[in-house]
Image (cartoon, rainbow, N blue to C red; front, side, top):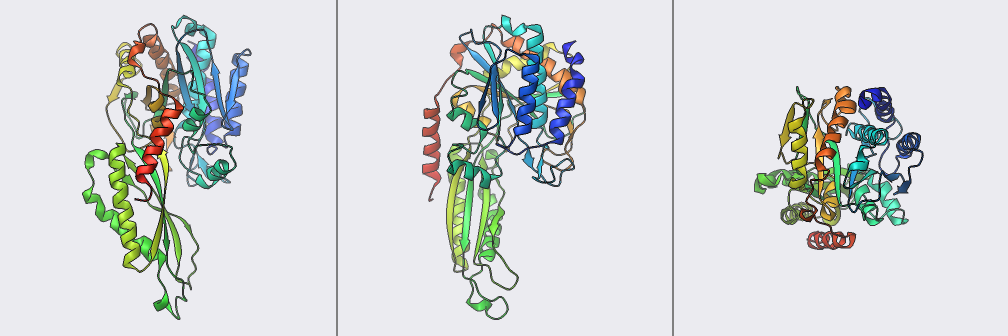
Length: 423
């Protein structure tokens, strides 16, 4: 009944966030919306701020173990979306706005019912900024001035100790595509990725008078794109490899042969080991393309996110909740995809699951993305999540879970970067 009573309020919050999208580490309005809601519903709540806009609050602290429910605050850069911010290009065609609203619906349910007081674990809510890997020039500035230590919001929260007292985490996310039935998804693993920069270097000359003296950096980058297309036949289908080269910087004029262009590309694979193999092929393609046209290329690699392998043990509790509900009609399972997320980094420190949910139409991150089943999103699905928590209560074998430190995580990142830099 509580979810029906608060439905209009939660829907209004979702619509408001959808209409006011903000890019990562800039989600000030969204963060304030979350803070205001929590303080109104639970005036005694202690709210911790982190990472410019992140928020953490705990409903209880007296148990030995703690489970976090995580929502992501940020939007993507999609200026052609019909609800994009005209100044920033931000748009919520990632579905993160529904995460925030669903988390608040769940939070208020626990506050109103006190059901969480009977759990044998504490419940924390963490609202994390900057999950989407974009707006990198701005984040580079934040890194350089010491405001943040990571591009992604979850690794940054890990650095700050936000998850030090957390033993397991639950995330949710929109499933791309349209579903006839109300659907949830478990055990959908995500790829990890590096981000590669290729600075092609040539020699400028007058494009009409003396192109013979030039070395065209743009042509090198074009050849590189062709080479990447041809190298795909060497890549394993089972690894879900993805590369998406874009022109990230250039200074070109119609009457001057371009002597410099920067190509940026993610490199996504299911496993870290194969990531290194593909990185070698990409770098060889870049060097060969530059050499073929008498130019040069400088290669820079930065860490993206680690692969995400969902914790199969924790997912069994979601499956049990699904078996007992009549409101969710279909369960998807074990569909690995090439999308990536910083949940992969957090999952190195502790067991994590990400429950996918339907309720949308259009292409995720596309111009036509929109929610079409708000009642499922903001009433039925949050109610289903309470059933998941109920299944977890008193049933978790904590010895089956693991915990690693942020320092352990840094060792892994350093290993990845050392093996993938200057290939």
